[in-house]
Image (tube, rainbow, N blue to C red; front, top):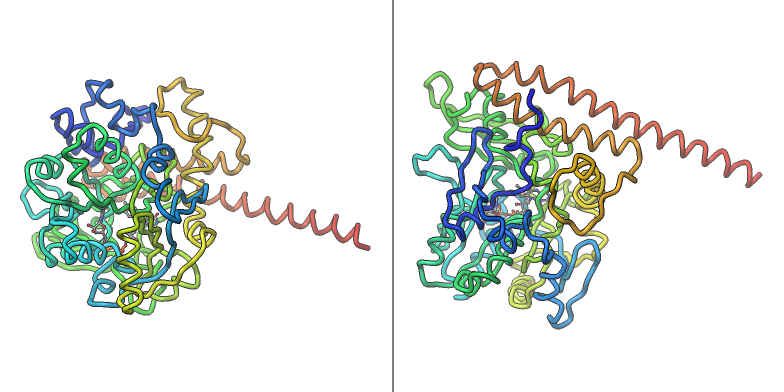
Amino acid sequence: MVLDNKKIKSFNEASGIYSYYANKKNILNEYGEYEEDISDISIANGISPAYTDSTNESLVANELYSNVDKIKFDSRIGYYKSLYIGHVVEGDYRKNASSGGIGTWIFKELFEKGLIDGVIHVKEDKSDNGKLFSYQISRSIDEIKDGAKTKYYPVELSEVLKIVKETPGKYAVIGIPSFIYGLRLLAKKDSLVGEKIKYMIGLVCGHQKSSAFADFMGWQLGFKPGDITYINFRKKLEGRKSSDYGIEVHGYIDGKYEEKISPTSELLGQDWGQGWFKVFASDYTDDVFNETADMVLGDAWLPEYTNDSGGNNIVIVRNPVIENLITDARNENRLKLDAVDADKIFMSQSAHYRHTHEELVYRLYKRDKEGVNRPQKRVNASKNIPFTRRKIQDMREFISISSHVYFKEAVEKGDINYFINKMLPLERKYKNYYRLEKLKKIKISKIKSKILKFFTK
Ligand SMILES: Cc1cc2nc3c(=O)[nH]c(=O)nc-3n(C[C@H](O)[C@H](O)[C@H](O)COP(=O)(O)OP(=O)(O)OC[C@H]3O[C@@H](n4cnc5c(N)ncnc54)[C@H](O)[C@@H]3O)c2cc1C
């Protein structure tokens, strides 16, 4: 297996912002990941997060929000005016959404109030280009509603940005942290885009997946790669926890149209910690709470909320206009939102924060040891994380890189079991490190309690 594959180990998230600015193509490569032809590093520096070392998310967020009236700051989640957990009450926004539905509702609200003319978001791609989803522009409430739901699928911005530039109007956009930060960088260079995109809504993002993730989910249900026509990665399953969601796939099995639903807990490759099909670049952002976005949405992965299969959002508000829309809607009972503190928001993403922010130091240390030219981050390279955590980090990297390589080989062989048989031993090894970690904790706490007993006698 070629683990040193440069395509798989690219630090560039290939959002398409460079491709738009430099008038280049952003292609979906043979691993199902976007790949930009960065031939001019001097252009990429200042536009692509992976190539920009002159600024960072903290400095850009400072410029945007430090002067906002009554703004607060938390070192983990960044600036915020208010923090909430909850969902949409009005209409069918929550029912049709992945989580609490605020990701679609906020665009409806901005549109209805005349604050925007269009929404740049991710929708089913009905053209004949082999892609299941892409960034598109919605210009009516129905079109906005049609874009609901989380797509764990590669997307890019170069095509829609060209349309935004050519078409008059005010827009709102939604994106993962590196995309929103990239757009903030672009706005400094391209005033036309900067002036037109009025609101940037951010998603929390564990990591991005290659298109092989959708293919593998479908294949486990009987749909061969290329035979999927529709996939819902976040099918709410009534009576189950919101975190115990399902997947729905439509397409062709042996030439016959079929529709299938399965709980994700019964499928391989759904443990987000392991990172099957994770895009390498996702491991090189340190921005968990989309620090340069006007509003941030994620899942309320907290026991007091996950019991409700309907789903709830965590909400971070930084922009005063959005804050007013939310306050009005709460007063009119169109939204059910509990006001919460920074610790609560942080707790809902604590595992994500540990991987993405705290343990990034070790991934940077490894790259430095290899002598690789890697992006500058807000944390410094270090190997000082516990032994088992280093091993878990090593395994996560090995699993995600292996998944890209072995899945491509499995598709070439037409054999899903080839892939599964390669991946399962890696999963077992990964789980063993978790067992070791648990054991270490038990041992340490037993020793601690013995010492305590000794001294309190
Ligand atoms: C790749 C990815 C990883 C995520 N990881 C986490 C995580 O680790 N923890 C967490 O709490 N939340 C995560 N989220 C966010 C979460 O899944 C929900 O999208 C969020 O809570 C909003 O839910 P909603 O019900 O309010 O949105 P909905 O009303 O369902 O609307 C979703 C909106 O997001 C847009 N959208 C969908 N997919 C994408 C995409 N790939 N890129 C940009 N926009 C998109 C849609 O077009 C729509 O406008 C992730 C989202 C994505 C796309």
